[in-house]
Image (tube, rainbow, N blue to C red):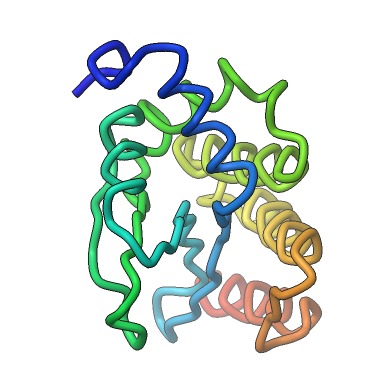
Length: 166
């Protein structure tokens, strides 16, 4: 379903406003011994009713809607595939980024991380270090966000893996 099929400008305005009010841009940092650090970007929106998420899904044309794990009374719209993020979500939001007032900073950081990951910047130690710093900066934009580990500990893991692979 393309944006024109859902009501054109009205649907787009609805979706952009919904994103600005309700969306979450996050990047989890995972460490696996032997594999190193991995960054997983996720765009998501939680709602009690499925219908608004179906409209958003139809306009953005990416992602999926699931029951929210641990809160089965809620629905979760999620886009976590790098290709869908770079080819669908980011181009859509870039067109309307001037309308993102509450989420503008978070989107800019998220966008930079996703595009850098798609270009393979994370494969170099310094590139990954910069992306980790950006992910921590992104988590500071949202006052509800909390990281399990301090950034210094994560960067030490990055340095530790570099020593092992040498």
